[in-house]
Image (cartoon, rainbow, N blue to C red):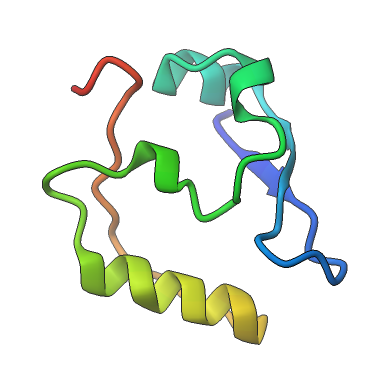
Length: 79
């Protein structure tokens, strides 16, 4: 499956501490490129990624609240 885990134990930015092989295959990023990036996955944003959804996701992370939305992410190659 395709997933990542972020550390929510008081670290601002919630760094990614693990990502699955499937996540790496799906996004085109190597695990070493993903580790310690912010778990909001800003590195996967592109032209069609909604700024409003991105802001709401950040707010939910900061508030440690559940949040569900459809987000348009991009692979490393921009597709």
